[in-house]
Image 1 (cartoon, one colour):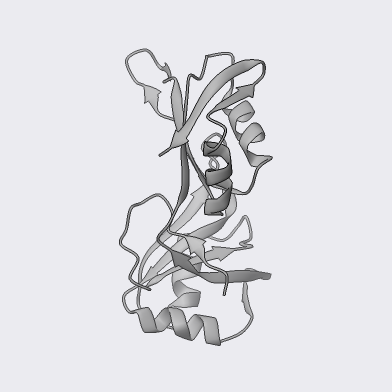
Image 2: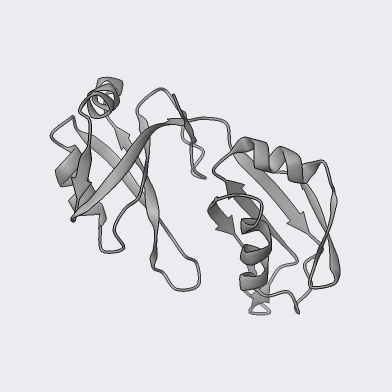
Length: 171
């Protein structure tokens, strides 16, 4: 069975969490709560969005009150929400998260995403901002759908983005 990582919220994974891929761009939290509510009480929905555009990235994490609801979803077969077949999978606790340091201002957020998405599917990018200077700090965190991608990147601690060397470490 394919499993997907927990997301970036640090929630304990006790079998109550689903990764749902293939969402329509129009799907909202309430629509997911309404649809999956027939399998059990939904505690939380976290649709992942692009940090620059605010647009859905087509997947989310959903937490049920009871783990039995996750099993019911998995046993139910195909799921169609907002006219699109979605792909729910049990979330797993292990994340494929890396720290990227040494980011210079000439490396844009888009450059970071474009570079690292070549290695695998990115499920979250956290790019901290210095609120006093109103500019990006010199580091970020990237979470991949597959832990193996992060392990592969960590094996090469020096990466080059737009001719600039950056540091890659386990987050």
